[in-house]
Amino acid sequence: MDKRPIRRRFRDNPYILNSIKDKNIYIINFYDNKGVMQKVEVSREVFNLFDENEKFENARFYEYSKHLLHENFNSEVIASDYSLEDEVINALKIKELKKELNNLTIVQKRRIIKYYFYDMTLDEIAKEEKCTKMAVKFSIDSAINKISKKLKK
Image (cartoon, rainbow, N blue to C red):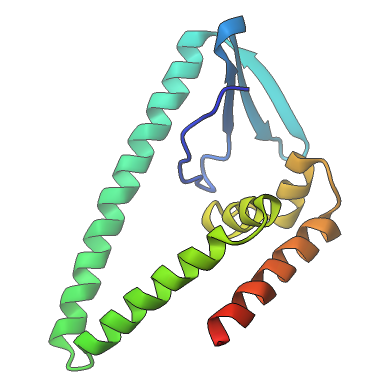
């Protein structure tokens, strides 16, 4: 499979695009209403339409989240709870969290990203990685414990 850009996945847009461009194979994966992964081979034009739609949705979501962040920031400034020191501390914590995420194993990092950033369920991750739900849960839990121990120091 060709490497695809990492994009946010939305619950109302639950498909995954895959391609093998040198063989002209374009696939759209999705779960049907029974939770079974379906793979549909499509033409390049259809694949490109889905890809463009995904880009558009991500851009729209980014603008929307920027707008919400701006609104929240302004309301925090207006409400006297805003503290520059707190913002600096939060920024440092986020930087440290990113550093610890990079120290995880490749499998743990991939599963954490799918679970927390792409909102995939344990079942979806297990099906995609062809393993058990318990293996995914154990991997995520051990990664969280590892990060927690490092951040508490």
